[in-house]
Image (cartoon, rainbow, N blue to C red; front, side, top):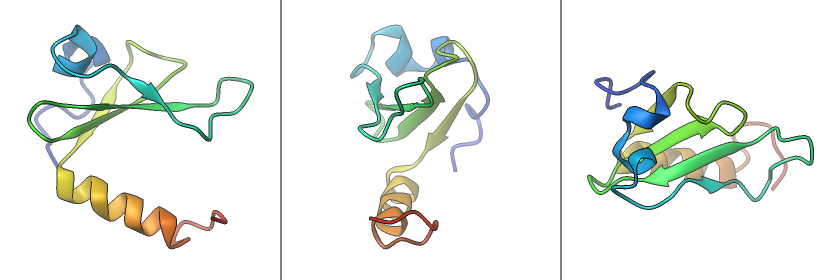
Length: 82
């Protein structure tokens, strides 16, 4: 995982500063704002943040890590029905 930016404030991540694609809210977001947002960085990495704390800490994943997470989620590896 790209540890040099993990935990950095979202405003310090290039996607959050307008240098890349905007943050996108999950289609599984709840009506009470229990959401995550992702941004696809120009480096090919993916940034993840809590929508309730848009300037809060972020996690940054490599493309391979993100693909593995999505594959696991689609396969039901996290106990969430697909």
